[in-house]
Length: 262
Image (cartoon, rainbow, N blue to C red; front, top):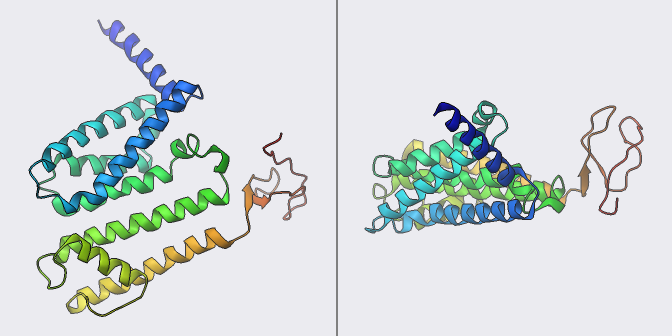
């Protein structure tokens, strides 16, 4: 029986490895389906605070927990080295998301951490090697990652503010109020109609403003800097070069940067 189980497990891992990492049309369609499902889950995580009090919420929450368990288990089995995969940051993000899904009533104030799945999706090779191969290792990848980081930050801060101040501070009565405060603070608009009380609230606002501006600057840099290709120089290791570069500008080593026609 143990040999049969081991043989079945080996076949299952081989099959999952082909689906999650292979280049066959079937594997690509499978990964596109997984990415589409991921986007739906992220949409649910963002909108969840708006209908958390409805009766069907817990049913949907636990159903999504089952989906996350199946996906996380399949990704783990598909990994060439399981323990190496389990040390990755993305794996632990999925664990945190799963815990908040399994304990929605006890960890309601930490549900905003689920939005981290947006960050992990756009920072994964799984996404870029499936959906955007043409833009992998380009400025567009950097821009998408910077935008995903900014959006993730906005919704995490919104959830944090909502968990701390909703129904305890006049003005923040709903999730939309917390989102309004976060966006107006990050953009330093500062209308003044909604502020956090006491010294702790002021310090939190300062942290939100400084970190938010940093992420906006990073996004602007990704959008405005010259388009380069990521190709490590074999001599000095310089990572980025001009699209038409023939020699490395740091050490003058001749480069052989592939293009779409080669």
